[in-house]
Image (cartoon, rainbow, N blue to C red):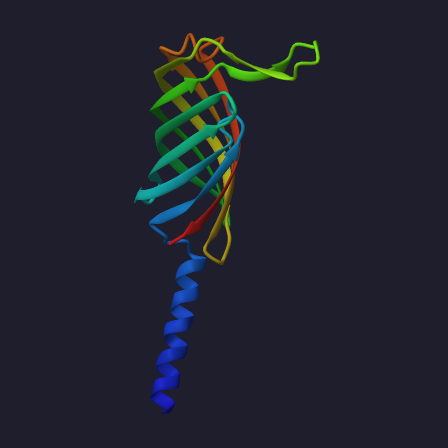
Amino acid sequence: MKKIVLVASLLIGLTFSAQAQNNSKNALGLRLGDNDGFGGEVSYQRKLAKNNRLEFDLGWRNSNNVDAIKLVGLYQWVWNIDGGFNWYAGVGGGLGTWSYDNRYYYNNGNGNGDFYYDGVDDSGAFALVAGDIGIEYNFDIPLQLSLDFRPEIYFNSDRFRENSFGPDIALGVRFLF
């Protein structure tokens, strides 16, 4: 019985020390920001080497008039600052699609109620290149918080955005495993 308790205690201790050293190869969570209303993104990170990783973010928007989806992939370099703090920088690109539906209700003011207007619908696809710079903290528990700035330059997006530049600032919360 003493051997079982000793082995169990040793395994539990090794598990917590491995998490504290942040040897996690994967991170999955949310990246919450507001670039053109994309808002939340599902975010996945995959460690490649000690100081390199891949990050993939899938963002979406679903509103009354606009539906859009965007997938971004980044290659990142990671540098330790102190303890659980790291800073990182990276480059990458992405693809997306959008659909604009110009239907809405309005009141013409003559007392007849609301009227339906069916305007011009539009849709398209776009590509982007992105840079990324940020800071993150890895807790002793399997949790990571990050804050980053990701400037994006869009191509083939004339009808989707007025200019081709999109600054994207976001807070990330990820589970490490």
